[in-house]
Image (cartoon, rainbow over all chains, first blue to last red; front, top):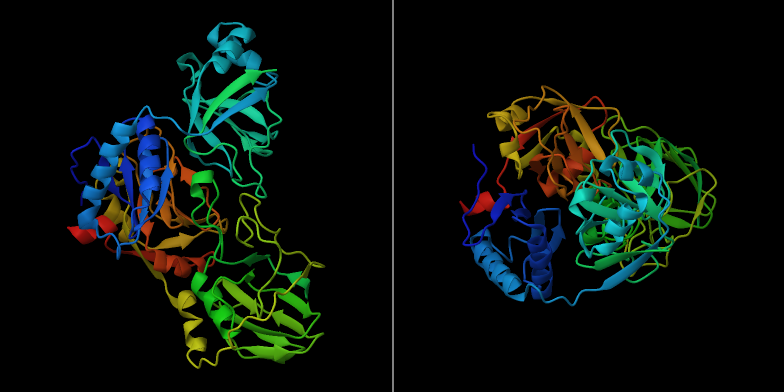
Length: 216
Length: 293
């Protein structure tokens, strides 16, 4: 048995995900964000959820409202519109003030053979976008990290990372919303409240939010 | 008001959870056996989304501080009120001061207690469900806690002679339907047949986050890291050990292990009733995309 895939006119792979969802695999992170926003804006009947991953969109479906035979056409139209709309950025912007005092800051500098100040400069000079949320409520995976800062996570995670820890791992940077175990490299801390269920919206960083870090 | 006297291994407040918030990193949570909670709610005249108590392997003991109408469904356990045996899956109108006790279910794992009016603790993000992974919602129940009960619903308690048999379906079944997941091509040829062609033993460290299964290993053909992708309750993830984990209601919303198969949503309640040591099998079913082929 092979994985059923469906050719689209656009560079996508449509992968099966059970009775009520499909997984759309996209070649690049910005396309994930753009297509997600387009699909949410369209509020297509039968699409009950759109959730982003690093390179994928999980699209939850009501087969009674949107039969599979019509899905490719719906996705292609949304993708074309998303491509046309790319570059238009009306998403939220957040600046996070960071005290660069993280437990891994010195070792990151050492691994890269640069000064701590250079690490901070590289982390604060980039424009980031929240690619997706996961791990815990309000934990955004931010893309845009300076390529030299792409380092593997700790081989053995810390049992407890303080809330507000600003960290990096692989191609991402992010902030731990609450005290939790974690294997990312800690660069600093912010006092911003990343997640508050009483707030609307509860998550400060949501898919598509643009983020900058500023050293304090 | 209901006072908790004993909880067994784990009792928690559950409703239909927090669907639609995965984009913020918030999992669905909610009752593991949605059908059983819905039945208990229907029997006491509640709306389907009212919060009740999910009891894992019995052991709940509560005192009603005010008169209440209750019903139990799901894994059928000995049910006593003030020491008297009561019908399972039936509405019981009880006076203030009544002591309600659930023993261990002889089969199945999770029982549900609904009270007319619903458990009325404060909702978090639209739900009163305890998410055991993220900590959202009320804490798991502990002896001494007092739970408020909501106002009378408009519906009447139901007389349903078929309720008793409905209540046990999940606990009796030993097979669940799965369709092919997105990452079958990350496994060696024949892995789908290997998943379907054996019985899998539910492990003791299974919980609301995932059901861990033990059997002949599923072998990955690709060992590189999969960029994190969204998951759903029912996703069958395969970590490097080759032993699959079926994600439960409190699972994280993204994961980096390849998903080989996805359990049919209607069969999640069967999984919710499998206790450690149970042997289950998977039956092939059609995915959304295959329905089209």
